[in-house]
Image (cartoon, rainbow, N blue to C red):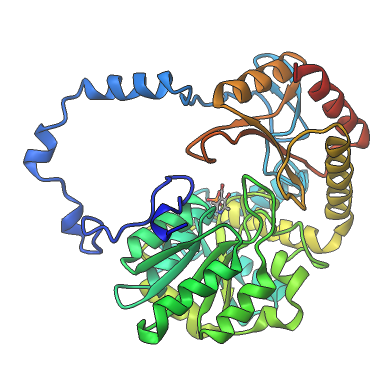
Length: 426
Ligand SMILES: Cc1ncc(COP(=O)(O)O)c(C=O)c1O
């Protein structure tokens, strides 16, 4: 397969060097002619086209806090749709930390961290994260999306090369696009292809950046991290690792896939780890951990960091409490991963098609978008919330149910899910 045919999800196109996405702000302003060429009614026709393709999306209006059981449309559902993997989002200990911080420091941060938004709870959170991750320092962003977007943009420019897994998350893809670097998309988790592209790129780039999710959000499989680190050494590249779905869940101390697979290599200067506070840690925000010079460079270069309001004090305080709980309560992640093993084995026995998932995100591949939507709706009728994932989030023909487990689920919950899947599939 030629590189040009590789599709990067979720936008399904090879990343072009897009001149219109210049770092120069003036180039983002649409010209008068482009504005007048788009009639307002085109919104409706675009929406109609989305509907025709079975890809129309609506927001789900929840009536309860996050949890293994949630309320929607006046009914209780067994919830397999949340990234609150450790059930910390509604934990009263986090809520208390947030309330205390709100009383003392207010609800909003008020400004960018470079102006006056770096509140005491945010500083404490950064120290706590650096301690947990055993790095010199850490930098907290207002979302994981902003962290990914910003880190790639800050470290790579027109003189650099970025190598990006075809299944990377949208935030990494957009980071690649905005960086204006030469972007090579390698086939999903294919280290031979990555090696080939690194060789083809050669040593001419100022910096080579390999960019990958650690756990892929729609497939639940792992990046081949040991091999990627070897290639990074061989080709003198940096690795940007997005641990969004592994933070709090994998590794002895819950630090993620790098901790699980790499041993001392975690602390290699070649690896830049990005985590999120918004999933297993139950709060909001993203973070980068690393050396002091790396973090200082980000503070000076990273546009989503510099030009955005700092994380709010209550979120920072809640996240800090979560970091402590992740370390103090390893049983949460152990239970979660145990349940995931049970679920994967049961689905395999029953002949459901899945991916190479190795973790708490367990997809059931259905095929067409409409079929996946129908299956999800049948499960909802029976009181189970299991979202259908369609293109462009996944490739055509691989629409699926994305089951995400939580520490608050029991073996009985998993059995009920399996039973209802069996009943609903026909
Ligand atoms: C792989 C991955 N990276 C990053 C993000 C963004 O993180 P956040 O929700 O904190 O913005 C997500 C969120 O869905 C994700 O799935």
